[in-house]
Image (cartoon, rainbow over all chains, first blue to last red; front, side):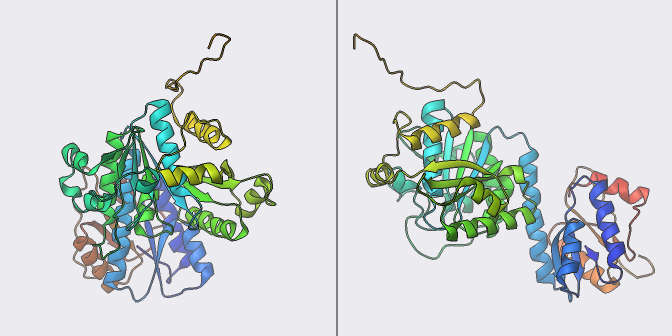
Length: 339
Length: 68
């Protein structure tokens, strides 16, 4: 914790010295009575991730330390030897399609590449993963597991996980509206670490926003996919998310932008989007409303064998995630004169 | 630290863990910070009443042994 009031210059030098000494393993908190944006910016540039104002309250500091602990737990996970990759999906606006994208990528990884995949629905209420997979969502859910994380082992996990016919395992969202006890970020961090040791891929369907749970998930994951549609309001929100996450020191290479429902009739091009959000677009997915509507209505995700641009794009995406030695396992079709 | 009449400790930080350092804080604020840190299970490493733009060798060694 560094006081930035007595000498802002020396405070910046102190922050810089600490950062360089321990290679970024320090979290710096600036303390000041001044809320001047320029001073805040200088503190951030010197590596401070928190800016607290005087008089320093115990509760204020306590909250900051809890956040730092969560971030530390996350970095411990990243630097650990967890076998699996954790991918987070976040819609920048309702209906942008993060759940649809996560469900399809998950089922393609399981079916086409025989990967051990878990999709966890982090929504506190009425998440849509179960619906898209045609599953009964009245069983135990992810939030209940998070409340019991101190007892988490393979046996307990098995009692919470629901298996889907595609091969993916699913941790569902609560199926009803109601008061729920808050989930601690420590519990979420521990659960993600455990799950990444069990599965090759853990796909987390996040709610919109950047609350503590989402920030913990983003801190823990290997890649975060921001899903947007190419309309101007959604792109405005996307730009804000990108800016905020970069401000929060999320490495740009970890931040992947997915433009869903992108089609040739759209007036906004990928280049224009990239210019507007100052970040590259990693994946574009086509408009495929009829096929996706049918998938949602029947609870049957689009199959990897389906010949459509959407299926083809998800297939390509899944292939980029899986190590080259893991060849796709698909049913070969025979084309010839005799059949 | 003695001049500021602060009670502080330099715990053994072998094996890592979360440590807290303050720099340039008024003594009473540093002491309040220490109490919150201990309450949140952070190890309170040191309270420097001055800025430390050039970290001394001892502190540098302690910091390098810490996890965060």
